[in-house]
Picture 1: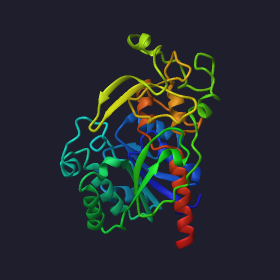
Picture 2: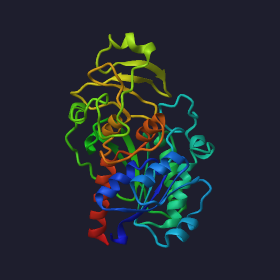
Picture 3: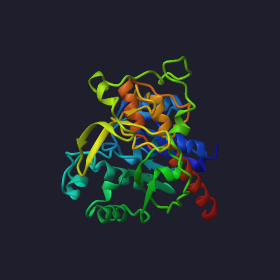
Picture 4: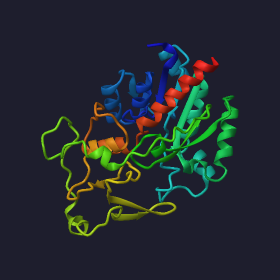
Length: 320
């Protein structure tokens, strides 16, 4: 594998972003996450380069001393909780979200480490809420302060990038990304080809998950697209336990989200959630059932980073 496509993965999670980059021909040389089960999952699927750690306390020179090269790419997916509209407790002032909230400041730590590592390309993924108010200009100021290339705020609709579930995110990069405008993939196309989890199957994470008994009666009266439970987010109501429709793409897969199978009577298994996020069938998840649901819902869909990786390589071969 050529060294020019080697990369660092900050907040690596269970390896969603890395699966896509690997498909595109990249090699991970360093990854970090604070959760033990994420690190174990990452190392199960890729080069055993992930370690448990806190991005806020690590210095880029520590990473450079370990990898002994300037990487081709640094990818970062700092936590979105301080910025997402689904969080009813998010801080109202956008400035304080980014600079006073210790979790929100992880975005700034990502920029700091990118500056230390000096990659040819950087990609930082987060929710659109990170651009609320004055934050877009504040982010530009941080990139200038660290003497980094001007950021491009690429808004990506996952459905147009080959993901069978809705998800709109900003991918901040020093490259303007092209929208491939792929044909949408329906829930039916993804789920009809996997055996009912009550039958023997090849997956450790494809097992029967019942609808909670307290909601069972109500679930019989649901229409497709409806949810059993609604809760108030920062800007709008959010739903959980939604009944999927084979003909449509799925709603946003989140860490705590559960879906009712289109044929009813059960929830999607963790493996089925992973398929809605475009994970490949060979990706293994380690942890308990809730940890796996979280890893899947918090991941960057691999089909997106596969497309990004190909565009980075194409740009590099054209301009360097």
